[in-house]
Image 1 (cartoon, rainbow, N blue to C red):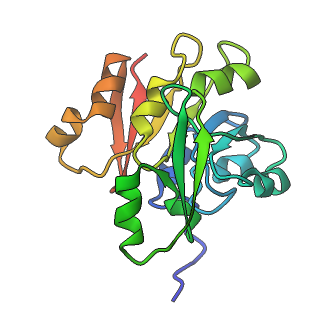
Image 2 (image 1 turned 180 degrees about the horizontal axis):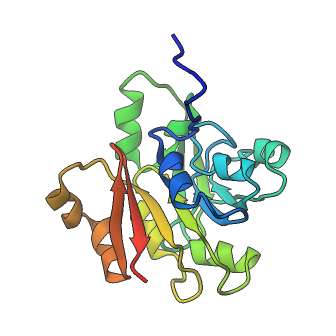
Amino acid sequence: MTLRDGHSRKSYSQEGEDLILHRVFETVDRGFYVDVGAHHPKRFSNTFIFYQRGWSGINIDAMPGSMEPFKRLRPRDINVEAAIASSPREMTFFVFDDPALNCFGRELAERRWQGAYSLKQEIQIVTQTLGEVLHRHLSTGQKINFLSIDVEGLDLEVLQSNDWSAFRPEYILAECAEMDLEQIQKGSVYQFLAERGYSLFAKTLSTAVFKANE
């Protein structure tokens, strides 16, 4: 059953993250986002609602062929097929029957293929850093309203790979399953961002939203 009336607001995110940001940026008509682990132009997207509003940005995903639907549905964006990690190296990418579950890391992959999902293939991919990709496509100092990261366990590596002196997003979304504030503060992503002047701004079941202090 679908519950919808004239007062509802559509979300494309898994847990309404886009609506949190929509409220933050409701007066910004032409912003810019970076989406690492973009997955699909619309499905589970934290950025599509902003594309509809006239924003643009960079979508990045490791899955071979993943950028073809982005090129069709989001031609205003910069669409990059790339795997992001803390340093360039060859890594094994595990591809599942549901692309939202694709991941690096055999331990995580094994937990998934022992469940309800099927592993389709393993691919060797050479990673790049986020800083490299951003410098390739943006001018130093380009304003980034928000950075969304959904890379199934490699969020810290993505953050470590950014060039913080050149690119400092106003808001950052990262995976975080903890709900207890004390446990969140002990996490490596929280501590990394706190050291760089970010504070926890909002929390859903699986995502933490951080805001730059200045």
